[in-house]
Amino acid sequence: MNFLIALTENDKRILIALGLLLILIFVIVGYIGLLVERTMKRQAKRAGIMMHDVVAAKVITNPRAFIKFGRKKNNRLFFKQAYIPFLILLLALIIYIIYGAVTRNWKLNIFDYQNEGFSTLLFIWNFKDPKIYIDWFGIKIIGNWPPLINTPHFVWTAWASYIIVPCLFIGGIWLFVTVQAHIARAFRIRKLAKTVFNPSLDNVQINSPLQNNQPTDNNQNNINQ
Image (cartoon, rainbow, N blue to C red; front, side, top):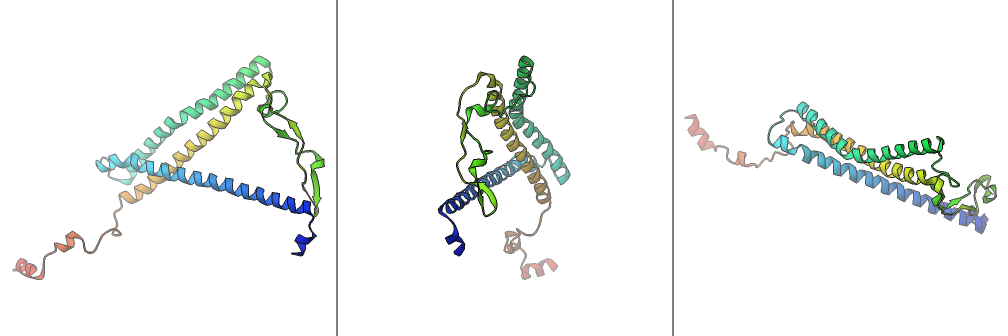
């Protein structure tokens, strides 16, 4: 409590801002984790659907054949899903080669905010300005809003970056999700191979119809006679 009383109003505002920033980071990370978990579950369920027919038709009757067939199906589905994001990433590479061949500039900075980068379309603040930092109990932290050094504007020389950056962003995320789905299906296929062909007594009920139809003592005596 004495610590809070010793803080100035500016220090308290900084603490509140840092707390809100940490909460925002935790929320974003939590939603990303939730999205990954749901994707894994959905793709694992798809692996079961993908392998249902061959098991139901008794085309595959052992775990080794199940895993081998599942791996082929999974890889085939992966290449089917991954070719579009791969083409998007390939387009980014082609644009970069064309830009370098035309301008003779092979050191394109796609994040530059002045002449040739995608950041020319964004608001950019100067976080390197030493004036925005203050000394807070011996620690240098941001105490003032950084100055704005760029406002969104179109630059013709940045045309390549305007295409490359969205392609890298969309294609990269798309390909990441596709790889994640492939891994989820692979794990599920291996798990199913251990359970489908290994019957257990866990689900057997004591009062099952088979046991209800067991011969009585009288019937058993008649059989023995």
